[in-house]
Image 1 (tube, rainbow over the protein chains, first blue to last red):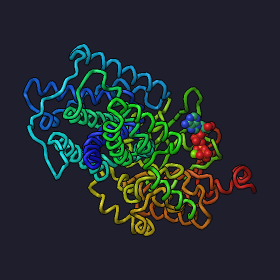
Image 2: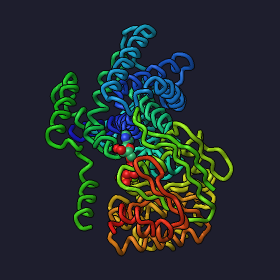
Image 3: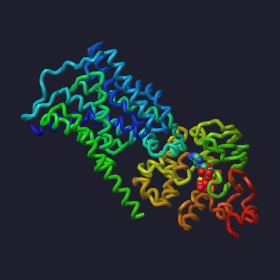
Length: 294
Length: 234
Ligand SMILES: Nc1ncnc2c1ncn2[C@@H]1O[C@H](COP(=O)(O)OP(=O)(O)OP(=O)(O)O)[C@@H](O)[C@H]1O
Ligand SMILES: [Mg+2]
């Protein structure tokens, strides 16, 4: 049973990784503290649902459409938030919390407060020994992994991705190399929201959509990002798997309603024990060592 | 090559630069010296477009660039190596250099420039996969200069490249600057190291509290009694 739960947790973690890497990118590059990130996950869920209602396409195909839709929504949201960049952080927090409420209410008006799920397109599940894996979550996981690989490749191997990392470290120096910082900010934000939306579309294979679900995903994404080390995309990736496994374990041994309590406990514990994030340790050590030998 | 006329600039309400005019002839090394907080960095950031000019005009190779974005200025060959190196600490040395050739206009000469940079600075080649933040101060300055060279500068502005370096490294940096000039790059050198900066300059400007107080050949300024008293303690 334990193995079964860990595997389910990994599958879930793959999808959580998408949304958290997106949040981390937005925080690291655009320097926006986005408390509406989870609501963009939910917008992704409803986008996938709407595509399903209209065309009958399931989340394994509609994700290709959910990405550009979410990117466009992110682009629009950025126009609202961008004035707060570089200003008081409290203003960003207020404006994104406000945005979160607006999104939740718009969803409530449009889709009502019902819990909506998507019918499974598979009648059986994959059986290995005595472990059962639903094709649904397996497919969602594989798509998440593929997009994650593509994203990391983009970030580490392309000029645009490198420019995003450069802007996150020193935007003035980057603009002295000819990088258009404003454009990088909006692209990073759009990309981050696209990943949130994609995660939402894929989560629909495991969880129901309802207008206020954004709260849970906000918390989740922030816990993962803080756990992984603020603004560190790879750290968020590792932390997402930890949280995914943690969630399936609490869900089974304690009860599904305790999910959020466990996130909070994690959050508080990290802030007390390792405020720099669990996974930022290795890199920091390397730096410190060089500094002392220099 | 660069003509600035009556430039004013500052931060918020406080004006830092008062009617600055300068001319930098093509192929020369021009040194801009002045004490702490004189406004040197503010002036070159205005030239690079990071700071807005409140008044006055900037002309680069016959074109008015006063209102252009920093990116458009880099594209035209106006490149700055900022004060304090400002490398991207978590990017590798190689990635830092690649950032120097981010613009499409210079990406074509990327491989060629990379090879030249490694020839000029073999230390950087040895450390190309190391995080830039882990380099020593001297190596960081070399990396910052190499990164600027990746942008194919026509005018290279260096803001206090000798800052925080040991004397032997300082002479090395100044030699490199002269090597770069020999490759047909015009140099604007900002320094507090007045003696060395002026002795290799074709022309020098002295900036004090946001005003140009003296200008002339490097030789002339070095023999000026007032300047010697104020900056060289003689
Ligand atoms: N970002 C900023 N915001 C507000 N004031 C600034 C800013 N940068 C510089 N100043 C002020 O502008 C004045 C000129 O600073 P600047 O950095 O241009 O001097 P500098 O000649 O480059 O000095 P240094 O030799 O120490 O580098 C100083 O009084 C400084 O306090
Ligand atoms: Mg300065």
